[in-house]
Each structure stands twice: as structure tokens, then as C-alpha cells.
Length: 251
Image (cartoon, rainbow, N blue to C red):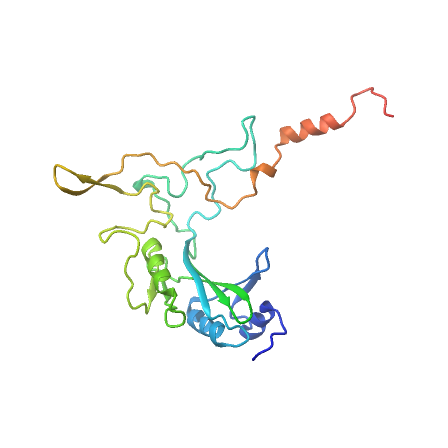
């Protein structure tokens, strides 16, 4: 049995020596970014090396970085009605097909994030990598290292279009057999491309163009909670209330 005397981040920096980028989140969890050509080798080490012993893959997901940091909500200024609770403009997901956003300015658009658990050391780590090609994002499959990656990789392929090389049965998992596109991509309309309904006269399911208007109720940006932001007008009013009136005597 191996006795762990160093922190997980120290072990990562010592063992991989510049092969990965390591960081810590606000709650202290270690996260590493791995080059895609080192993906399998690093994963194998994290599972087999007794200093890590990450025997369980608890989650795997894809990320589309198109439009990252763009907001459709007013987040820094307030009005007498409060902070914005509706969308402003047309961001990712709210567009017609001819004006869909492009990703020319993004060097690495698609990434895969994995969450691992070490039962032996009671530790967690997240591991991420970026696909090299935006047009056909390919990442090696982890199924031979953690079998639980099977359905997660199929889900990510279905929703993001990320291909997992070496997966034995890479098929769509959540969408229909004839579905076109990948619905979690940022250049996929939030309302979809077609609507599906059963036609009683024709006796079959039919596809029709979507007629509803898209409306975003959840902001697609990481921001400070607006409840704790103070508008400049309110701040000036508070300062004026706290300061003594001109000519008033101070006791």
C-alpha cells in the first residue's frame, strides 16, 4: 500500500513535468489540461499509478467554446426596474441559418472534460483536452481505460459531434436516427431546424419547419450575481444619504 505524503497537485506537477497544465478551482479541486496526443497516456497513468489510483470515471462531457464569454443579458448596469432578466440582441443559438455565428476567430473550439474519482485516496480530478480539428473534432476514446466512458462518449458524439477514435459502437444516443446536426453546438438553433408531429390524415409522423420564436431564459455567460451588484445611481444616492447636509452642525 502506497502512503500519500504530497498533495495531488504536487504529484501531478512532479510526475508529468510540464506535459500537462495544472490549476486549482475555488474549492481546491485540481484540474489539468492535456494535449490531445497525450490523452491516453495521461489517463492510463492516472488510473494505474498508485500515487493517483483514479479507478473510476464519473463523468465525461463536451464543450463548444464558440461565443465563449458573450452575454445576451445586461449584467453591469441596472435601471429602476432592476437588472436585465431578458436577452439583448442575438447571441449563439438565437439566429437564422444564414446569419449563424462563425468560429474563425477561435483557435480551439471543441474540448472534452472528464471527471475522475480515486476511491483509494478519496480524491477527485478533472482532465480536459482540445480536439485538434474544428471541422472534424477527434479525441481518442477512453473506453479501454474506463469502461464507464462508453455511454458518455456516445452522448457527447450525439450532442456535440465529437468523434471518439477507437470507440467500438459510436452511435447517436439521444436524438432520432435521422436527426441532422448536433443540438448542443452553439451554431445549432435553440429552436431546432424542424418540428415533429403525428399527422392523423397521413397516418405517420411528419417534419415541418419551426414556426416559434426563440427566447433565452438562461444567460450563456459566467457573471457575478446581479443581486450583489450596485448601480452607480444607487451608490451615489447612498453616499448622499450618509453625508451631512450643507451647513448642518456635526456633533
